[in-house]
Length: 111
Image (tube, rainbow, N blue to C red; front, top):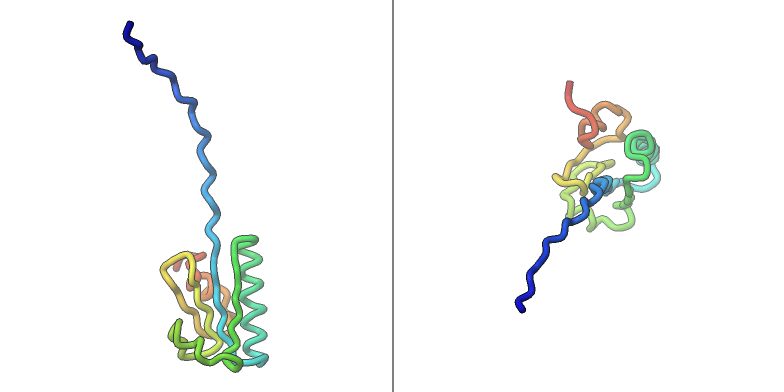
């Protein structure tokens, strides 16, 4: 006797909540200058306010390892590089202009 296949209904899947985007940031500085310290404080404040729990900051001191500047083509310091999410974006300066920094990080649209 031939077997017949019976169709079974698939259970509807729960929609997966989208994974929050992780922002990978690199801050290039030259030593512990006031401008470098201010840049780190500003990027940390912006990230805590707008990316709470969704960011990683890597600080690269070019006084200790200047060869690392070549990889991201750093020409001025301090420079913040957004590695992820793509596309890569760069912001030069101490990030004291928070509106400009948010637009540069693509967290706020230009009005």
